[in-house]
Length: 289
Image (cartoon, rainbow, N blue to C red; front, side, top):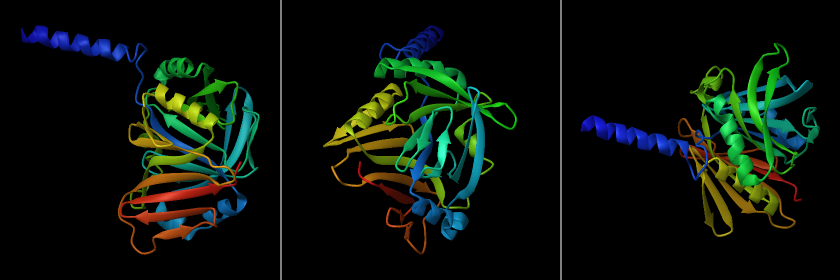
């Protein structure tokens, strides 16, 4: 009797795993990293900050060389790393992608989501395509120096400038975010994780992001004029842009310990990092549309 009951439960779980809203199930989709293009003065202020370099996180400025579909790209940025999530900061007008035929300008952002099992990317392609009505495919990025694959990413066709959210998975198969960052993460520094994002958006940006997060299995809630997408270890709050007002991006950060001493750091008038307990908020302001 116990065996029959156990088999019944296992069969039921298997059926649930094969169907989510009538669609193929997908793995948990986490935040991996955020790319932000900054005005030159803000980039320079962050670049030369002694606190960020020596107390906040594992920070490096480096140039990456990659190949995508036979086209080479080179880009220089500041990397600010936590345990499983990190920031890539670029300077206005100095980063481009031959593969995407784009130039990164102030205020552009890309939200890199992540799954641990690269082989499950096709299931997400199906979900996102069904939710958005657009075509998506998987693109492999190679390390230029070795020619070896570094990661796969889901990209949409055609490219939409406001649709900067991609799902990545690393090589070799099964490598997690924490494993990828293990060699560079410094637990004795303050930054631990990016846990939330608040961003002002146009109606087109809002609709695109909501479609994507719904496809990833995130819970979508409305609070007044705000939309909040909540998933594993991360939430994304979308706030309508207001005419002639600055665009805002706020990052919620979890810390390894409570910050003592100075509580606010300014990186020009367009960015500030404020600490409270074992959390922090990093705000970026960009010119109005």
